[in-house]
Image (cartoon, rainbow, N blue to C red; front, side, top):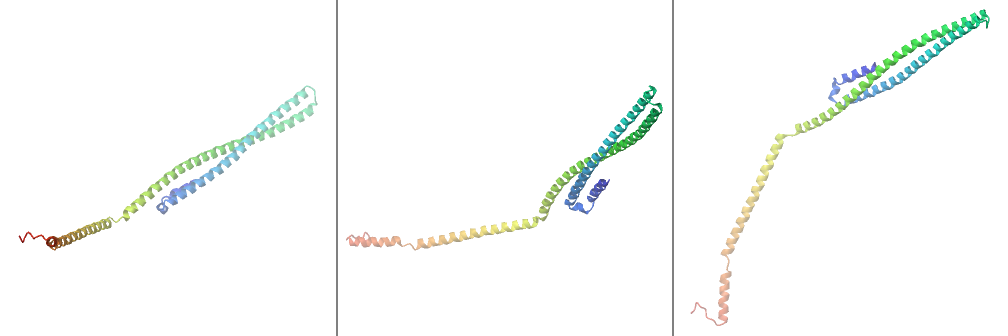
Length: 238
């Protein structure tokens, strides 16, 4: 059957270069399943038609067998009438003989219908077997497709993760981190140096201000002037 050729093509496709692109086997498998479902529909339609022929053949067989029995009974009735003097013997023989001729023709039709019935029954059995095979293949390939799609998802996720890991420059990253650490250390040292300079400048200014502080001597002069105005003698003069 062409369905098995398609299955072979699907299996063959998985061994060629298309396997490198996981979407191709998936698309081919999906197409194969669609083809199998079309074959299944055609097989079901053919099965229905053959079953109809088989049913008709059985009906014809029964109909012709009924005619066989009917002509047999009519021939017997005619002969009995002739025997009972109810009809002319020669006429009875003629009609009985014609009934038997029709009976023989009906028997031939019975044999033909029986042969057709057997043939159609065999065809039905073969089609039913093919349909079961197609259904089983469809089920198997649908399960295979689910597994294949799951494998593609896992492989894509793994590939992307591995790609990211492969593109990660560990040496460059470590070097960058080292440069950042060095720069931070340098900035910290520089900040500390500026702090030391600021503290040193502040200490020198404080020492200068302290050495240049004349506030006490100036206050003493003002005190002496005030005492003189008040007519007080300086304690030093006494």
